[in-house]
Length: 574
Image 1 (cartoon, rainbow, N blue to C red):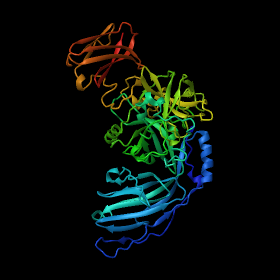
Image 2: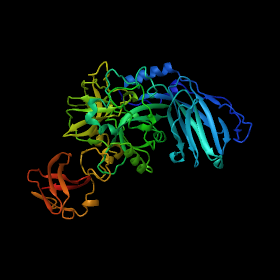
Image 3: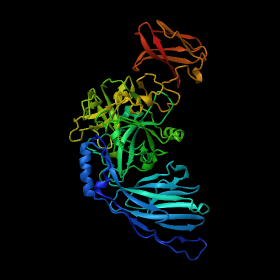
Image 4: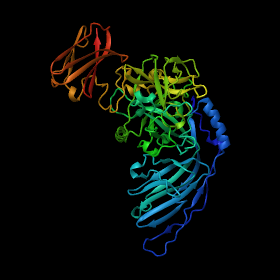
């Protein structure tokens, strides 16, 4: 899909559904020792299907205009464990069940407006035959605002189950406020047409040969299930590194993916980091889709371009995954999934070649390749806020972008280091018109050009110590590594290392005597655009000399590296 700006919530235009529920049956208590157990069918709550003819017309127009890729619409309901469903008790466990049906849905998602679970209680969704069961939600999974979500449960007839120990009877609170009817891009098994809704006529799977050199970068890219009022959308985006080297779970996508989304709805967003085929061939479906879902769920907004999704700027949205309170858990889980914090380049320099990695129509991960230099353009404006790209044919396809690709990163390769230089707003490439151009908001414009407020600049969060560097490489473990930010010395193994004189004229001395002599030290000097201008290797235990005669006067960054340890110091050349 080609994206521009996210439309205001449109659900009121196509329906206002109130569920049609059967009356709640009285609670039934069963006893395993009783010879007379009364079996009662689970009550059914029926929700009319939306007007799909109208929705398809709306989607066709929205997809054409480049809006976010909608995949579901919500019915607003008022379902609680007190006013619907059936309670039973057996063997010291209380169980509440309610079947929810909405004919024709590929999948249903359940938004809990309030979910409180005591120890030992859990909630899940299953189908009638119990051949499907969602992940269970426990007390540890409760969100701060007490909302929650169980998403993308395949089928149109599903049962919500709540269980709690008898001793905590009455402590569990379950309230369902929205039920999403998903009608496309759900990952439902469809062997007759291949997995997903993307155009397989030209799209290239990330694990085709075209992706061989991008196996690290792909692990930072995820598809995003966006919840926004009465609509569900798909977008793409990437985990990004930062100059603080603190492993913060920062994620970059497009503003039009969540231009008006509330903070409470962003708590329900879900991120899938490993949704891909194992090889170049597209399977009929992928098992264990939920295994690709990152936990904890949700995110919160840090900064955006405040530009109506690219109309007057570069269309970026920077979020932090999870919450401030569970950041440590989020980092641990990201590392456990093998996630990669992608590097970036904030210089306004056209890239000669590279790729985009994305989830078109929320499909498995794809790769698109460009071999001609990016050119400067705008998006619905005369601003120089975007990179314009033309995709090149490769051995396994022609790699375009589609709906769901919004917010995906475009990479450049520079000296073997791959870095993000933009995020997708939209364009005209289709399998039928593969040479039509797409537009990526410039990382260099995201940096500080959208506005003066700090929350309209990437720089605020990616260079919090104001080092002035404009480039960083990616990392699987960027905690206290990568490019450091401490201007007054560093901790760890580099404690005690000193630089003199500073400012320097011809030579800079670096006292490495506090380090073990067997340490091999790489000394790199970067200009303030992040470009490497000199490099040498030495051993610790003595003073190293860095010759600066060939450099112009100005500010530079000197990086020391040994093994996985790094430090950075700013110096001045007279």
